[in-house]
Length: 471
Image (cartoon, rainbow, N blue to C red; front, side):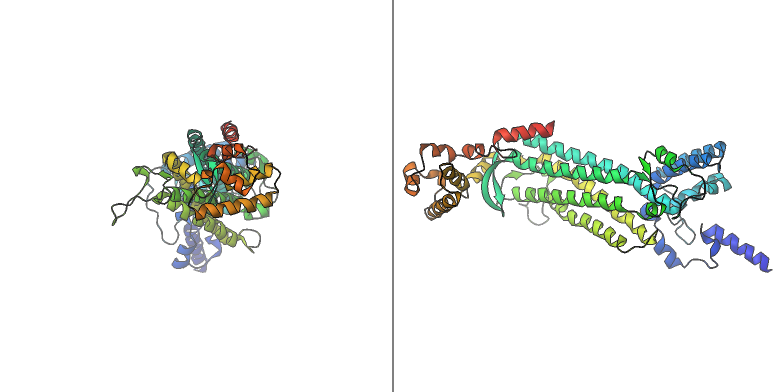
């Protein structure tokens, strides 16, 4: 009787959980629901199936599977993948349902192939399996992010080329400072997002390592050709240490860090779009299709998409901090804490990708008011630095020139005038160093032209920079 009971227990455990052989009680339903991750990680089904197909081939080379068995597994996995594209059937969410995407694929494989489906997991752990899936996902996600970055870069370059002669005020401390070209301003964001792309590429280089064959932590117990397996999956190398292979999430942290920095840049750009399209600035407007209205105030036209991009930057930064806190103090090798990496990764990538695409659309749609921007570029005494530089070129120490022009600004404020309205005689009242040629420096074109250094806002330099980024 005792023997029959033991057999029944073994049958129960095997039928309920892939790890149930050691356990003599049915899992608590609350704990079972709390620990499962299928709702989150089922989106890794393509990566999981690709890894399983490669693993089956490695098992043939290791003498575990025959070529005929591998072929049957390959066909069944392709069928399972095609079924994922159809509306998914309602999975039993009760005790014994698949915990995660790995167990779901294995369950479907065993339904199709019987015991042969259970041979696929030979020498493999969910620990190296999920690490592989994440690296494959990161590779694809990185490519999508780079494509979206290229789209935003293209939009900025196109608008810069269109606005190559548009003058606007440059700001420090949100106060008008010196005139710059709008194209110069837009190209500053091109520089930022190019660095973002470089950071993503750099993160992907370190993600280009296959952990498969590391087993649970100590390596596979079967003669797996890990280098060949890595090549089959398109990786540049196999991981050098089995403990690190299953515990490492640096590549996820790096990708989220790159996303976080990119989102900060998008937040800054969208913050400027919010300012520029306000009545107070009126530098630009958005077409109706890219703006929103008010449910109460009929006059409102709100840049809601730009505001949401600005807000979502905090969300992605939060995903990064979330994962960093998951990893902090985590002992080697695998711990279930790492299950939380996917929520952070998926949300960070999805949010950044959407915000890149939305920001590109906003940049494409902006309608700039050149005359308003040009008038604003003269307001706020933006010629002051040019006058101080003029005096410095006449051998006046810059600190003295700065002080003298400051006095001129004070008088201009008191008399409600612009510096460019001062006559030569009035200028010479402040300093005899002012000559007739100063008139050329009291124009927007003169002020812009004098910034003729690499990276400066002089028209020739901006055209040069535009040609370089287009190349």
